[in-house]
Image (cartoon, rainbow, N blue to C red):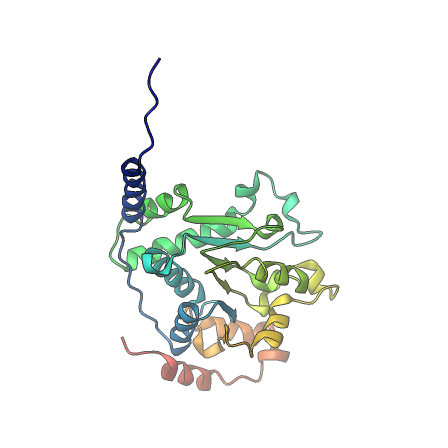
Length: 273
């Protein structure tokens, strides 16, 4: 009968050393993304310095790329003590749009969200001069340092030493939003990404529920641990036509906007390369 290996202090130290080396190899990457606008820089600083950062912004302002960049930077620095990034996606959108109606297992049901975030992370690595972004992302996932979760399966969880990113937060009701915020544990951060002009949740659109994003902005904006970042139309970087689309699409809200004034303000808000 084979003898069991004695557990000694040196053997434990060796195991810990192997774990540290494996961690270091996974996180041994360099990324460098420059903020393009003052609001992007404000968002980055809030994520780095606040426990909770809440955003309400239009599509195309770059909030996702800045948030994921900040999260990866925080994760790779061992002095911060963060173990993982957790990307959280909306709960059931209520009838007729419900997570339960989408075929496949949980990972397949939320793949429409995870694929977008993975593509953004790959873009971060590409812009930083890396050609192995996909491989790095897969290593982060397989090692448990990057997780994707639907919010419906978070009750009872406490996330310690984690960076939580709440996507499409305009689709969370007041109660659901609170449930996410109260998952924060020791040495953790939460960043919520949302756009109140693009609410999909049936219960919120129908007026049965209050959107948690607006409620959180109103109630938590004065807490020193919370940063609230609101982007304007002048911060849209994706394409200038988005402003023109909004004016035509919802003239009651955006019809009176002066495009030239917005474009001029956008030039002033952009940071020099």
